[in-house]
Length: 113
Length: 114
Image 1 (cartoon, chains in turn purple, green):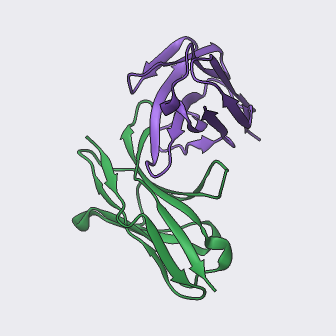
Image 2 (cartoon, rainbow over the protein chains, first blue to last red; image 1 turned 90 degrees about the vertical axis):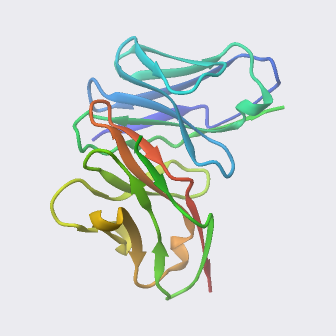
Image 3 (tube, rainbow over the protein chains, first blue to last red; image 1 turned 30 degrees about the vertical axis):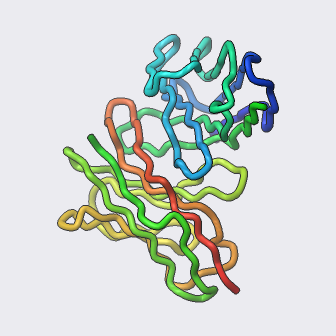
């Protein structure tokens, strides 16, 4: 069966520090991968999605970036965090079929101080 | 562009009463519609989805939703609320078939009153 992992689970970082969040999927190959951010009272905002290695699409201009160095690994990064980057970050995957469900990871709670 | 609207960020329901969460969508193509549930500090879990076929869709935990094209709605219901139903619920619509992007509503925080 397929599983999706995210780490770390929680992170507290000072403003201006770098960021690296990792997401990995097991039990499938060539998944579509997604990064979302969930801020209080604002629902889910799609940040990036990827349909293959080194194929990244950005949905929202920001100081974040994403990379997919391996088929089942998706990394969210920042060179300098802002206070507004605080939130709950969720990674998701789907096999890519037209009606397929997005399956979500457990999330990373990021607090920028 | 495809979008969903969920009204009422917080919904209170008595234990044993009907749970009704409203979702209206906008889509220029035949929509695929989803309801997800999120418990505190966890990821989202699929409750049910509509793609094609039967318009009444049954999901996990006793929830169901009905696709009504004429009303552009996909409301979620459960006949009898349980304390364990306290969570946040999100409606979503497919944005693009090619990459399975979804557009989510802002969510409904459900509080169950004993």
